[in-house]
Image (cartoon, rainbow, N blue to C red; front, side, top):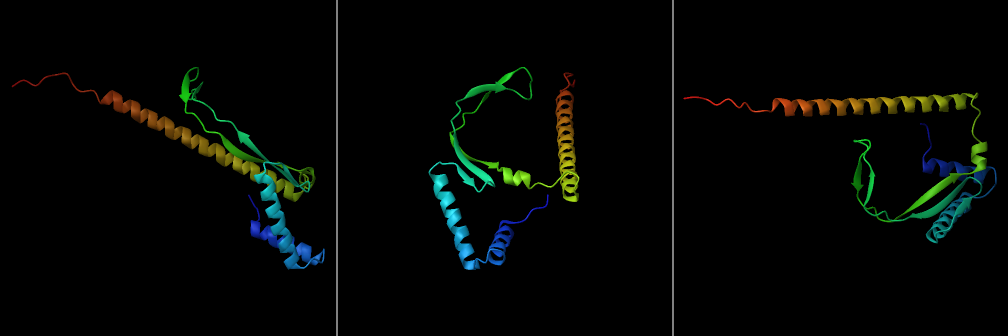
Length: 159
């Protein structure tokens, strides 16, 4: 998937501020640094941060999970014990409506390219899953053949 780096995004933002808004580059860099510092402070306070209808950053906590029984994926219908998990913190980002509205139409060349890239990613993921499953089946066959051919003969040698 095509993307730009963080530094490229910053450069484009600074150029826009300097060229179109007539803000000196130094002031623009100060603004970006100030914005980053304020966002980090607010996140440290555990508060939700809406960034200009572009994205909303929401820190939250996940409680600890004790040792518990969970369905066993390898043996359907059976359960196994899952290890306890400690409490943790996470950050969710919700895309704003202005970003969603900026998406290209599906009929546009960019929209078609994005859909094509998504199909290619799905196809590659399916191929990897099929290859992984084939490897697991091969390993299971080898393991079962090793058990059946590993039996020792009960015939005794005579002198």
